[in-house]
Image 1 (tube, rainbow, N blue to C red):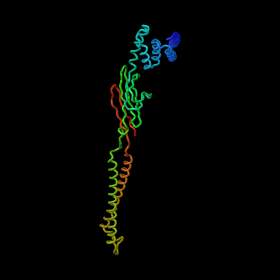
Image 2 (cartoon, rainbow, N blue to C red):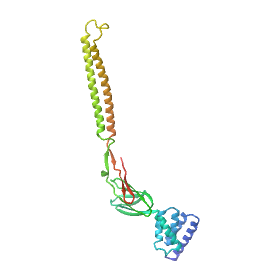
Image 3 (tube, one colour):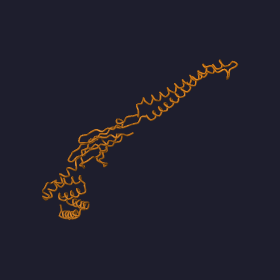
Image 4 (cartoon, rainbow, N blue to C red):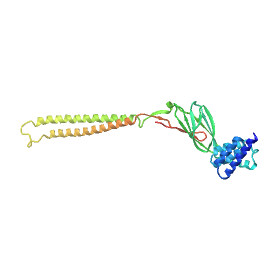
Length: 291
């Protein structure tokens, strides 16, 4: 390391410290990064840690703290080293590790919407505590969303295994397939029954007409000689059967239309399985359902 680079790094460090004292954390962070580019010294790394903690960037702070403590206490002042150890405990409660593996070549994995890896892969990332989302995708396979909960200092593991669409899909119906057919067939049967009743009514009307001709064809029939009671009963029976038959036919038509509607609504739909299963380390897998 040349004296010039060290001098430049110290100048940038001093400028950053001045800004930090003014509670301007983003500006000194950039100054410290420039200093690191000149001279990657643990003391400069620790100043980066201070800025990142103030900016609530725990993961980056933890990674830089590891670099600052790489050589132990020797490169740091005693007070700085003690402060670094305290920060180490603090950041350990705010971060954890996630180990992700995938054995399906070509699958693409994202973590919280950001690219993580392309399989075949075995990746370990330090991430903030809380709930995170892994998504695995591969053409011809069901996209899988996997939620992972990370707690402080934990090491979580998640394996991404995608199901082929052919294995994940099934055909589902709104109702059991026999129900709409029973309603539809029952409606047709009712219509047929109503038609039979109507035919009986028509036959009785014919019988009434014949009886009327037979019993009332002589002279003297009219107002003074009423139609025989038997003939009137036959006429009334014919009207009753006709009314019943018409009602049955209407009910059958309604039932048939209902059955036809149910058959349409009960068409098979492709549905992908939806599963939620606990995984080691607090992870769950959700296979998203699609129609």
